[in-house]
Length: 97
Image 1 (cartoon, rainbow, N blue to C red):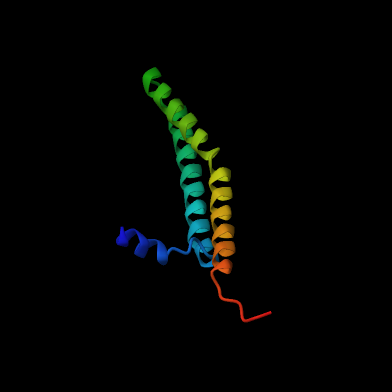
Image 2: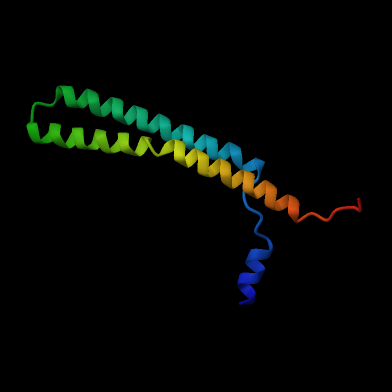
């Protein structure tokens, strides 16, 4: 029980300093998805086997479905940062007003 209290005591949420790694990760995911879809479409035009073409098309569509989640991930990260800032501002002691 005391371990959970100790862990929650130092929990502050995300801060503005967490924006850079989050944005960098999302940009890298976008680049990798773009390059992957481009390579798969290039391979698909060169493949003559019907089964291989079907597998490549299925993979391309699956990557496209994952790309649809990126805006939702951005909103969740932004909300976590805003909530972290708001919650950390309530934890500060005010100097008498």
